[in-house]
Image (cartoon, rainbow, N blue to C red; front, side):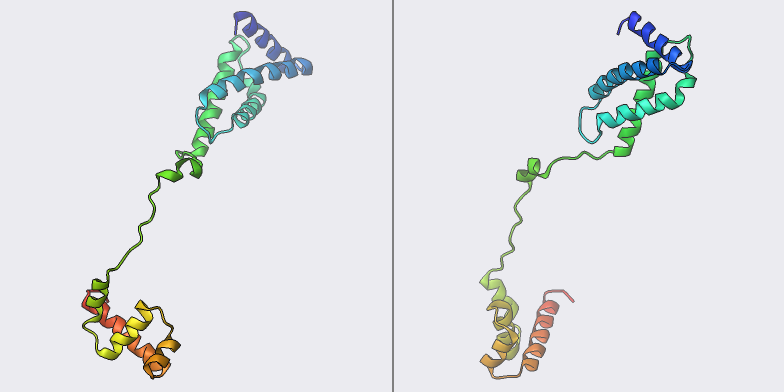
Length: 178
């Protein structure tokens, strides 16, 4: 921006304040281009739309145009408003940074599957009475249903449920869980 451009913008704003609509439209058009370049240079990461900041700045200029001192340069006044609108936009966005999940997906570790060895299973079952051991083993280890286990052992489903509950409670107590 040259001194001539500054003088022309000041002249346009003075005429706009005096009521010249054409001068005001020309002023806003020129200022919008300058503010757009300023804002785009300041926004280096996403999260703030430069065009929103430009529109908010133009609106603030429109509302506060009477505060401009006609003997002062117009560009520092415009850039101050743009800077404050940009700060407001960053504050609204907060301190979060938005990143596409696809960009960082490979950095996440694969969840490890918990494995239990046969020795650990036998250790957990060894302290149970034979009936409870058979029920817990059939349902929890082999994956049979309560009905299948009842039929296999020749007892009622209620007896299987009671044995399963008591057996799991005994294992939990033995290993320090309530």
